Length: 208
Image (cartoon, rainbow, N blue to C red; front, side, top):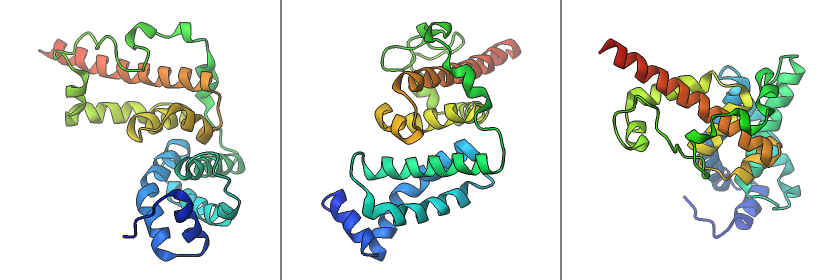
């Protein structure tokens, strides 16, 4: 696979129709695009959304101004495509997200520190490091189910932040939301995930 010295070189090759350049971006961005699409429209039409987004990307590349990274720009196109599909099909988008814009003081903020990590592990966790728990298959399943139950914007934010490792600044650009709202949504999502883990651990202790 060809290595590209910078994004400008990659974009130039994409615009020229270079097949290797296209394969390069598909390999590096396809999974992230699917994550975003699935978090907004579900799994049934996520692949279709991504394919439509790729067409939009190729068409719009000559106008790309480089105000964000290529990945952030592409994921924003996916996000917009997914939202547009929901509107066209008269489906309700992010019905639960209006409640997510409540003031941050209504959330159990003592559970997290300033960088968003857990400050206080769930009360039934019996090991010191939450990171060690994340490695277990059982916990991964619990977290995945909890994420699947989140409203779409919460799913998108926690997926992009925790699974894709994107910066909050980039996430705000992709989803077109303010920084303050993004923090509230992420905090609420993490709280619900924490509650799911805590509930599961509580059941295990009761059974014991």
